[in-house]
Length: 165
Image (cartoon, rainbow, N blue to C red; front, side, top):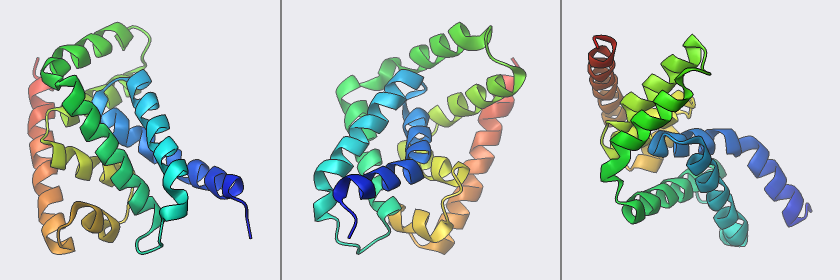
C-alpha cells in the first residue's frame, strides 16, 4: 500500500492546477489564489484519512476548495473586490500578451457572476465532467445544462459590455 505522502503527492499533481483556477476565479489575484490553493491542500492533507471514497476524490477536493474560497470571501468582505480586480488587471496589462489580457478579462467577467455561477463556470472551464459538476453543485445534470447555458449568455453580455468600452 502506498504511504500517505505518495498518495498526497499524486492527488496534488492531478488536482492543483484546477484548484488554482477555481481560487483565481474567486479572487482575481494570483498570490491570493495560490495561498487559497495551498490552504485547500493543507486541509486535504489533514483530512485525507477521513476521505471515505463515497464520491470522487476530485469532487471532495473541489468542495474543500469552494468552502475555503467562500470563507475567504466572508472574512475579506469583498465589496472592494471590483477595485482590487481592476487594479490587478491595470498593473499587469503592460506585461500581458493579448491572449493573457483576454484571459484576465474573462476572469474579471466571471468575478461579476453570482458565487454559485462562478463555481459552475470555473469547473466547466477546467473541463470537469458535467455529472461531477452536478454532484458538487447539488443539482440535476439536466438543470445544470440549462444553468450553464444561462451563465454563458450572462458572461457574453458582461464581456460585450467590457469590449464596448
